[in-house]
Image (cartoon, rainbow, N blue to C red; front, side, top):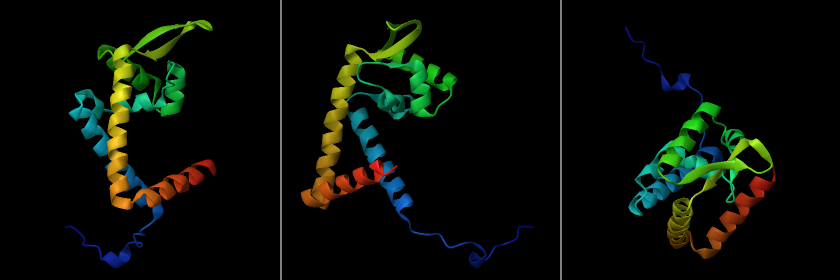
Length: 150
């Protein structure tokens, strides 16, 4: 027998800034991924694409990717392997430490970054259209202030 719980037995569900930021981030992410797929990067909708945001443009040690992404070493290894298979990145020897490997963008990977910038500008233009230029600029500045407050 299933006991039916009265709504009053649950704490109030607050409408808070965290949920609004999360929902907006999810909206942005889904629009970004759809834009990348439209640009011919169907692989971009998978978790491996998130690793790209953790990479320095001139290359990053795989261990640093593990730390920055919050993923396990095994997950980062798998995602880097997949990005290598797609020709987005490659591993090269670290000149500062012969035992270490640096993950760097290939020419194809740099083209993906350029396409990503096109998609980001489109999304931002749509947000500007919805909010107006001034309100969007204020939002960006406000979010920057929250980031720096950590």
